[in-house]
Image 1: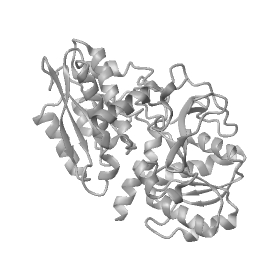
Image 2 (image 1 turned 135 degrees about the vertical axis):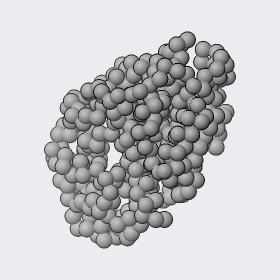
Image 3 (image 1 turned 120 degrees about the vertical axis):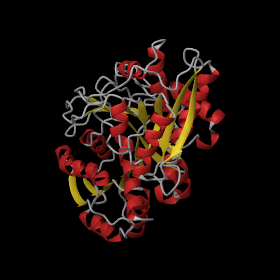
Image 4 (image 1 turned 90 degrees about the vertical axis):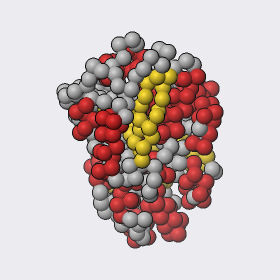
Length: 434
């Protein structure tokens, strides 16, 4: 595996979490030249397209998103479509992990195929310039940080990445684990190091000692020297901002050195990885951007519907870590189309989608507001609720962690700036599971 490939996979693992953080305050003023036309729309159909990395080293990471979209569209079409029109994901294109290819494909979909929207953009090489200029409604998985600003770009669960906002969750889990001393490991690229760098700066506010930090860990390298230093430092809580391969190397070295420390990872929670590395992943914690798929569905009708629909239409991807991101993107697109009604234009869908204030990803995510979902500001109010799920590997299952005293609630809400004293907040009304 090349260095370039590994760096791309880090973006997937870390950004996945921050896409789930609710939108920050402050609306964007970025211009969008959305049209009043309706390309790809007939009296019976709405045509959309998708661009993903489907071949090459990233295919296994990104290939679950389009099936999530297709399953949602199939469900809606079985109910008669939207206002009498069926949804047709007519083009699912592969950029092959090539940035220039992505731009060319985007132009083809808009200028030649005349799609109404791009409902599934899933690539590390997202270049929004052309799509912003045309105002094409665009939905997808935010793995690059390039989704904020423009009003027609809808990264699943919000288009903003706020690294500081998740540090209270790290502090809360560390305290719940009775940890005293934290080690932080990341690669020397921003996609990996940004979160661990924020944690290094903020965790001392929680009374936690940051005893070991390596923000330039060797990619595809030997982590034994790091683990030896973690052992000498007495770290009892290890946070990894690396990719799955690095995490497995870390876990293996921790076992070899006999280091008994709680581990928190931001990549590798896919079921296939758990089954392959069961022995190394036992009791590892993860932050999960959606309601964990193994959560009992009695209090989560959105999850129940998702699992039932995926099993019916896309069973091969039922346990995919990223299929929910496709489902979420499709749900937001459908919400905008429904709101537009008979006035179905690209401009209208963009405008009305940006008036949605309580989007829950079809019952899979914490609430987000698209009135503020495009902001480029990171000045988040300290008491702003940031809600995320935590799960832990137990056997071959990624088991959800329930919020103490809250029954089956799995989405833990903490103030964005509550690092010193991270106390659970009452989730906003309508949050799944409440």
